[in-house]
Image (cartoon, rainbow, N blue to C red; front, side, top):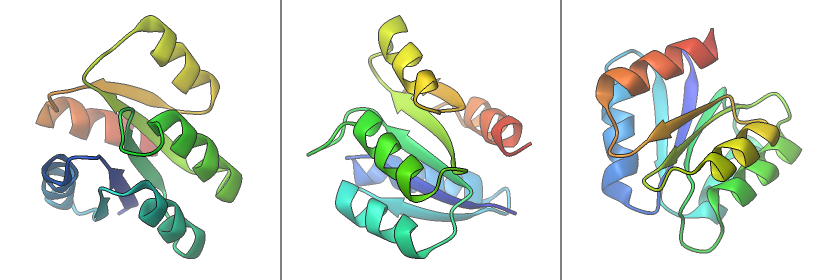
Length: 118
């Protein structure tokens, strides 16, 4: 299965994503600090990153840009509790494959991960 990175400023949310997707057989690495997640991607093969848009020091969009520089083929799903058309457009234009609204719906997350990983 896939190597997946989950980044959310709330560690419980990142761990929830980890629990949901590990049940599907994926290897999930949960982070709550942007720098740690970016450093991890530099030295580990990650197939998919699931990024919250609202983080502590950077925005999820900034993290998306950094990850794409490190690993241009990485697939990305953005998460937000504050969905707007503008944010969705910006994320998709920067290379995010999907967009999920919080609170995280287990079935929707599993479905989108499966779609994005193809």
